[in-house]
Length: 170
Image (cartoon, rainbow, N blue to C red; front, side, top):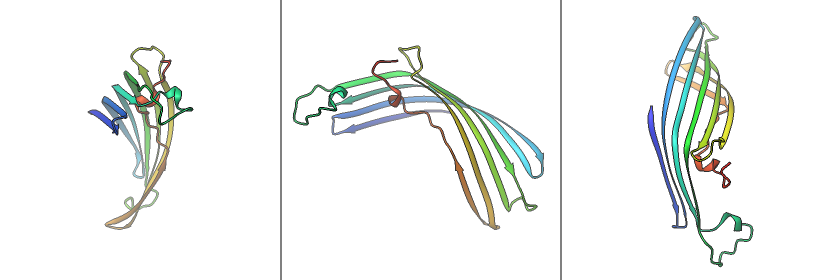
C-alpha cells in the first residue's frame, strides 16, 4: 500500500506543527495447516517512508523554567527531514479446541518489530527500537448469528518524527 499522512496543528497562531509522512508498505504471508483444528500464519511487513516536519513555538525551550508570560521573547522554530523503516515479522496461530469448529477459536500471535528513524543530516539513527508484541484473541459462538470476541496484546508503534528530534542532532 502507498499513503501520505499530512498533519497541521495551529494553536492561536503561536504554536504550529506541520508534518508530512509519505509511506509504502509491502506484505507477504504464508499459511501452513497442520490438521483440521490448527494452522499457522507467518508474515512479514516492510513499512518505510520519508518524513518532514516544521514546528514553531512562541518561546524558547531554554527559558521554560523561568517563563514570564508578560516578557518579550523570541519565537523558536525547528524542523527536520529524514526517513524511517520498520521490517516486522509476525506469527498467528489458529486453534479450534472443540469438535464444532465454528463454536470456539483461539488466535495466539507474536509480532517482532525493528524500528529505525534517521535524520537526513546525521548518519547516526535518531531512534532504534525492537518491539516484541505478544497477542491473544478468541471468539466464542453463542448462537449461529452471535458471538463474543476478546483480545489482549502489546502493540509497538513508530513515534511521530518530531517526537524523535533532538536539538543537538545526535
